[in-house]
Image (cartoon, rainbow, N blue to C red; front, side, top):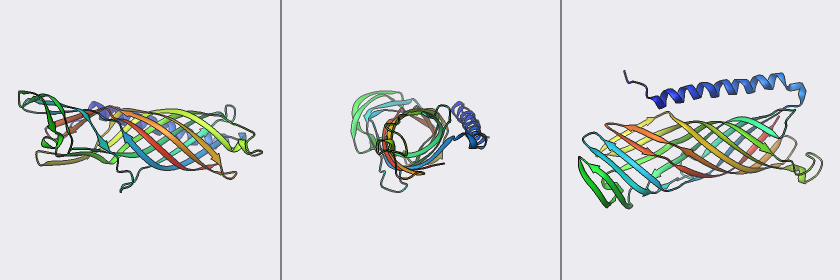
Length: 257
């Protein structure tokens, strides 16, 4: 039986915490119906741009290589598309503050046709040269999910009297979230192909945006996110480590109840 990694145990504990947090939101909904509490369910799409970073490949037999300043593609408008959802609770006593749970799905594809600086050891031999990434890593991507599941806290501003004037339709907001990341790892190294969902954490995000009320219950929003994850991904006989910082540009619809 495969032994569960520390990251896997952490991910499952954090998922359990997130589930309890979500259940608390639902309980709050049931208890606050008469107190003018507000819930907002949001769906969104968009695009993500991952910054260049260093990628480390470790293999049995004395290989430990760092590929410096590698780049990625997002391919957000190819299937599977970028998507996300968030449920937020605004307590009636502190209606500027919101507490929620969120899931969003981005993608990451390593550009293997680039030539980058490579340092470390290959089968015990020292390496310090410029090499095509694809000479060592045939393919690496997280295409079925650079998936974040986070517990969020946000603060919103009311620019006018909501429901009574035009400025009241706007609610700028800012927030942050922390949780687990569930990447779908896909790699081909030395003709060995591998795919697997894995649990990692913590993952974090910060976001700013503006909501605009269309009707009493429906609104649209635009939002910028910055997400961070620290990965030590397991592949057969090897591991790949990276710390992607990703910029997200999203827009979507919300239903307020």
